[in-house]
Amino acid sequence: MPDSFPISLPMAPAQSSDGCSSGSCSSGGGCCGGGTVGTHDDNAHGVTIGISGMSSKATDELRRLPRWLKRNVPKGNANHFTDRVLDELRLTTVCEEAKCPNRMECWSQRTATFMILGSVCTRPCGFCSVNKGKTEALEVDEPERVAEAAARLGLQHVVITSVTRDDLPDGGAEHFFRSVLAVRERTGAAVEVLTPDFLGKPGALERVVESAPEVFNHNTETVPRLYREVRGRKSQYSWTLGLLKRVKELNPAIKTKSGLMLGLGETREELFDTLADLRDVGCDMLTLGQYLQPTPEHLPVVRYVPPAEFDEYGAAAKAMGFTSVASGPFVRSSYHAREMAEA
Image 1 (cartoon, rainbow, N blue to C red):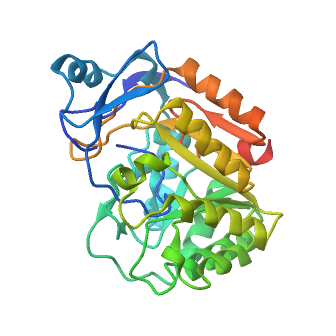
Image 2 (cartoon, rainbow, N blue to C red):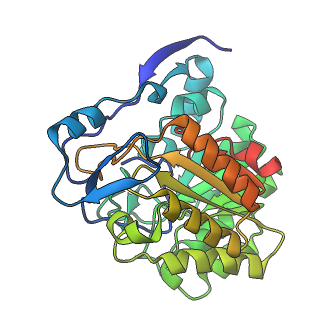
């Protein structure tokens, strides 16, 4: 075990009606509007949702991070090495942009999740801290720079995600295609993509699948009842399921993967119904993690899910037929991605 020092996660929930941090970016394109808030009962598996706000006692309780959201984070030169490689090659990572709590751990192991298509997203998701606003022109050499970084870091499993680019005719699908091929040619590594929904742009999904990534990840993020509040008007639960199903139809050999953030107000029954829907469309792999609010302007945390409950959900998901499951407070979409893919 490397030397480590104790830290707390950067942002405890504030008294805001909106807030989050999923640690992933391409959620399939969610935006968010509203601040549904609520209270929770530690003896129950569900959440009571209200629109009138939290009591002062409940707000004070949620401001304080529970003990299980404090951890030791490794330090050392490997962290600086990863940072230097990314800086030299002018690459963006979701680790930084989404304020992932696992960044220092992953970078100390010389691994990172590359974020292509720029660093500005076209959808103002209520849970995500990635920049919103005027998008940037695509950099034609970005796929080659990603491949070079993967080679320098010695990666054997490369995760590529992106901001959502609704402004592009293909949503950035061709850029994903080129990035997968560049990484494979340069390193021979397995490739996992975490894509937006491409808003149904004709041929976009098919183009990404044509590059034959070993894993195709598209996040569900939350249960159907909360979709509009969490992901916004441009995202539809049915489209998320349809996309995952279509990947399997196009290439059954590709492993499909999806993830949800917990603590946004979902109930136990809603969660299990959503997992059943994912299995019905052949989703192979699943991640479940705690939603954390990155700034006071983002969606609030409704509930901190205890580690034992995450363990319960993980075991239930395995029993439902998911081949690989990661379930825990710090789990994020690409956390320990290689281990999950090889399980």
